Length: 428
Ligand code: SDX
Image (tube, rainbow, N blue to C red):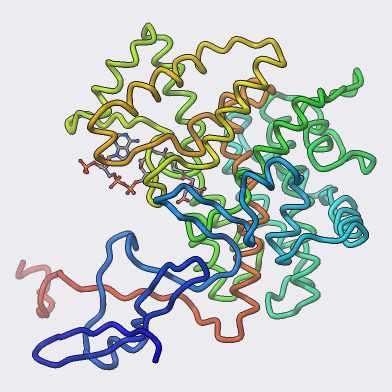
């Protein structure tokens, strides 16, 4: 007999099935709750609500565990590459060499964007945030592939996935080039994913661009660490938009917009701006820790805290070590890293943060590495989107390919005015 949960409501007893996940996490299946009791649940910001069953990523927030298709993030960070992790997340297994080469070929040969799409950049102000450009351009891709973006067509899904993974770095690099008034650099098929992106970002027609292998490895690592994170805000957005059967480009474009917020992916930019501000103010960590604790202050310690991780974010642990390594190898002394470490040390010994289980998250140290490898601050969240692309795609694909997929439509409890009749304006 499988486990159930009992509910006593208005004198009647109800029983609901309990679902147990691979790693032992449990959920009460309330699919029949309203039909049986007339009541719905209410859970502001879905803190306690599971939206789906998924085979892709597992988080254990209490123990700081992150698995992509069962593989620990620490092992993938050490042994894999971003493109291989993308294959793993999207298709569910580690590819054989020839499978991976075929996948890499598809991604490489879709990196160029339509010349008309390039011209759209002329319409953006040079200072517009690259996340605005990214979400606009990704959504606009659906205008160029009208004949192959039916989410219910398997071949359309496949080629849209290849196009999206391939063109996002090009779109991202072009928004940077536009902002600095430099010519767009075409993709180079002889380069791998990270080399190609960095070449499009930093090479100029006037001279050859040589990518430091230290930088290449650091960026590939960051992309792996950002690749998926189960049902976070932006992934849930992608799923909700995709559940209406909008095409993949439209769904992902919505995810980019959700990620932009400073409470989510926008935090990596906010962290560096915060550290820069603290540095400019003399580097007094204690003063800013006090502000973060002060309920009357809107200041938050950006890069700290997490809805799921109530222990160290395993990604933050890896990035912190990588930041130290990369700066040492590159001979860079970044005062912001010192401030970040001082803040972390002060916060982790302060009861306010300990009681609330606030630890550094993925965004706390990532900006230090982006800075060291020359990525401008306003491109940090674009880098997060680049990394998260395979995760969004994998989650969308899992949902679309589920034969019992339904459009997402939460309910509510109405607390507004009771029914009342219209009052003509002369009688108001
Ligand atoms: C990402 O979901 C994911 O998986 C996201 C992500 C991914 O890979 O997709 O991991 C990426 O978005 C990481 C988070 C990046 N955001 C930030 O670093 C912004 C700063 N952090 C927070 O704003 C906050 O911690 C959140 C948004 C991350 C989580 O917010 P919750 O779960 O809604 O928690 P909360 O805001 O209710 O905070 C609980 C308490 C509150 O105090 P009390 O009301 O109990 O007194 O902790 C406090 C908060 O005021 N708090 C902080 C704080 N974060 C929470 N206080 C100071 N500084 C902070 N950073």
